[in-house]
Image 1: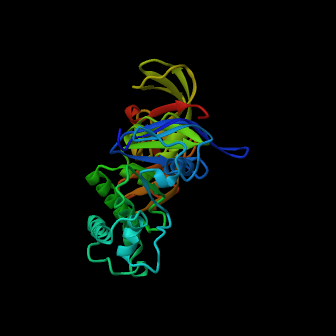
Image 2: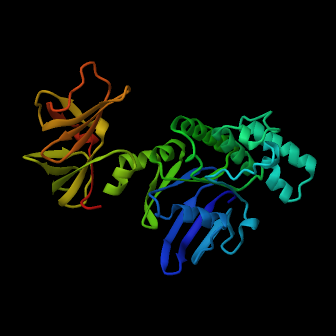
Image 3: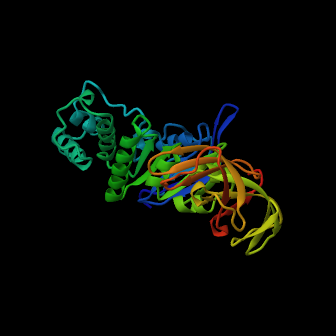
Length: 351
């Protein structure tokens, strides 16, 4: 299927070091899939295996249904956008965008026309005569994207493409990349360690840890139904509270301090577990209420669009985010914190 990517038990070793454990995955045509994880987890190795910049030690790689396991990068219908942009400083923007076409021997008129169309597509029409040094960081990144897409790849690969940009520009450029990918119906594989970036652009996210897949799913699946404490903490902020599951089944009952909480979620077995509480799901008050936990505010920070608190509680430190308040709670105050059982999630202990 054109634009699909399939790994069948692919392993990559560098000498005695296993950089990628046996990995199987399917990327559907026309989707943007992000490989997300901490440094050294195997995400960039996976991307380079798709590109043909690394060869698989074992297993099979298919692109568009074709076995490309032993094909070099030159013969794969993929284009890559690098973290460093890799623009030629002595060439004009138009020459940079058309470089790959020129190398492939396309006629000069075709190279020019397709390069100009590529610049128009990324919102840089009329910038062709400039040098890269005359562009902003965000504009240079768009030139790198244009250079990749004029080659009409089956798969577009993006390796930490926004890491050199400031926070506001990252948000703007990631929106543009997503819009271009959707408009062209490109299959794209995106590598980042930034979970907010991954959630903003992805149809699916593959979270990697220790050279293998920890969990894969839509951004909402991973956020709402984490399979482990690692996923809960990596995809969004999470408070992890040790609890004892006293009753398992379609509804789980957990022992939290001196009370039992019924959670409307399925759980497989009684025993130790961890309760996942998202910071914005926690409610603060100065008065005790049914099921609340006593707390002391050890830190409070007003950030304009929210107020963030760190609390000392009998179940451990808790991080809380609330909307802006006219009279926010102050560090040192005695408070009470509560939550709706429907907002809580369980993950295995020690996961």
